[in-house]
Amino acid sequence: MAALDTNVLVRYIVQDDAAQFAAAKRLISRCVGDGSTLFVPVTVVLELEWVLRSGFGFGKDDVLLTLSSLFSAAELVFESEQALEVALQLFRKGSADFADCLHVALATQAGEQPLWTFDKAAARISGARALAKA
Image (cartoon, rainbow, N blue to C red; front, side, top):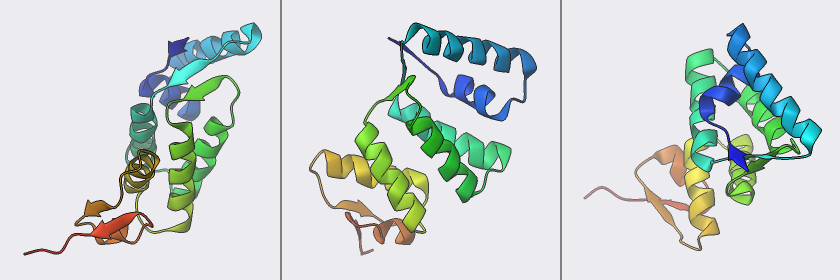
């Protein structure tokens, strides 16, 4: 199984470069036609959310919709998919950013809690706890 880098997913989603979009679309269509899948590392999802938000101005609702759509695509297999789904739900319900939600979800999946943090928004996520300053 081959894997995808963030830039391929970005081009496929935002379609800001016609040649790269066409190449990404061909690859994904070929996988659909072959019945094969493409692997997406958890780090790619983390970077994808950041690029969409900071580089392309996606708001929270657009990020949620985009990631939800990707997670349900049969041609994509995600590393730590269960933790990604949990992170998406935490992100949807709370005020912490997606990265913090993913950190908590991965720590929880590993059976390691709490996730200690100085970030006040992250500390409000179930499974995280604020670390008091000395």
